[in-house]
Image 1 (cartoon, helix red, strand yellow):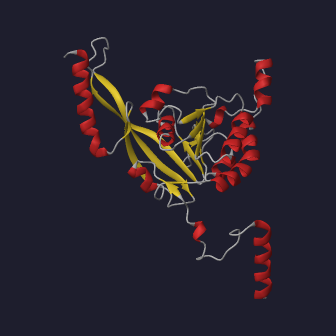
Image 2: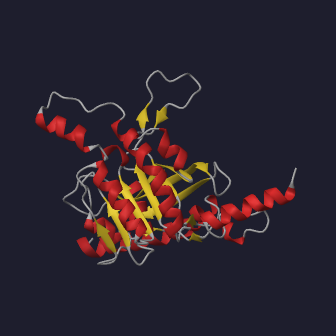
Length: 295
């Protein structure tokens, strides 16, 4: 091995690609992953000390598992964020209850997948610290949507979303890394057809590119409801659901140990709390309901 030739190659690469593009391990302080806290201690713990800047995070799970509420919560921790509800399900009240303040979040209702991903590129280049797409399956290409709108009997081509993300994500990953933007992709789960006996029974839409380019994949599910005795005489139910216990599992991580799990309580009217605060918050809500309904 010619060490001088290797050093010359390294210098040439650095000259062309910029300082810090190439280095020897153990000396690159720049490779320390910058992070920001989620303000949820147990979640921070299982993702390695906070959300990594400049990375793609996939949050996936079944319906009513708290995916969107978690995104609103994370948005509230930044001076400005961009939320792209391509499903058209933006809820102002829920965002506010998760801590999002007026003018803290730009909401862009994209019509097609191309619009959503092009917006990600532009806002990431502008240095917006957090961007979220809700959700991946709704990012259908314009061509597919136009065909269905023209003739309802037409079916969207299989793999349209996967091809779009496979095309766009390599550039998005590079831009996010340069600007420190955290991109959150909200995804759903689907039952696998013909799944083997001991294999995973569920999968996520959008193809393999999202799985590959995501630095962290967080699977969330509703483990239990948080409820209180119902005091509203107009409602027949014995209990009122005021929150859930969310189970979060790290199914993949490039920036921490994978497969960590945590249970994260959150209330619909205020967001995530520690387990120690569940009982006091329930007591507070029960007292408020008694005063509200004079019982």
